[in-house]
Length: 421
Image 1 (cartoon, one colour):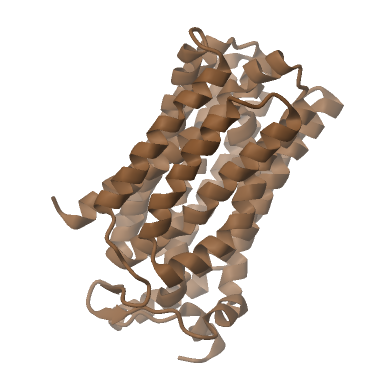
Image 2 (cartoon, rainbow, N blue to C red):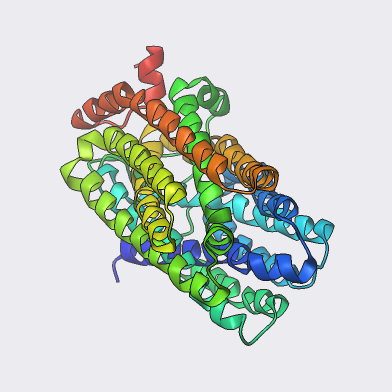
């Protein structure tokens, strides 16, 4: 089996179980709220608490991955996922939910940047968009399978038992990571970046300072922050929106949710093909267009008067919301210095995740105050339009990177802008 194929398959499973654990609470939300008499405002706090832990862990996780290598984090983190996912079924109050969800966020956040480091080390520039697209299909298929699974399991088990059962896949992931991910120490890692030559990658003194001075980091982080307002709102409230606004029952909810995530899977494949081949040189423009079309899907879902109209809008949203992830990941890796990829992506993810912290709580508060989801959908749509503007501002940097690649060297785009190259 080709090494790249084994790596991609292992990372795909990692991402699928990661997202299954993450969204299970959303699909079980109506049952949890009913059994524990939680209102939308309180449940919004529970949803946001995961992202708080995820937020805190990104930078430490990136620094660790650059220093000790990605494999150790990819093996250890799923063990903690298993523990905290199972512990979710043992809590019954707000404080307990917040504690286990923050802890699960910390466990997942520590290993998040390791995936980008692995892709940067083992896939060249043009391979990355397609590889990341395949990797990110797990973000769609994980929830697509989780929705029907939770719906069926809730007819036979309590939500507490279900969360204890969901600990098992995480342990399987830990074993898979140990077997299939190369033991890449950051100080000895060596891999072709442009697909032509190899260069050693190591953590240099002052690398963190240089990363923070790169204006492209702040542009792509701004885009990710705004994107996560929409992504966090969609992931956290889509099942509850269908249940409360359109009267969808729990059994149907999982099936309808799976339809949207199936479109997300298709969106990733289409964007991966476009970004890796046809529109390889125009990935920022492709990503910005996806954000605008995602906003259009959200507005359509908000204004729908029937469950099928709402599902259509949410499916369009899923197609472009998830589809753009492949281009985003490829752009992020392209802009980051090879020796500091995990740190670079860690800062982007940390600050970007603030949007995901804000969105579930903000939307929950809006629904509680107004009795409808209109303002929440408007917030998500406006955020995506602003994210598109940030991405378009990255076009000069990506053009400079393309020129550098055509010269058979892998240059730091931040250095190009600062006149160091």
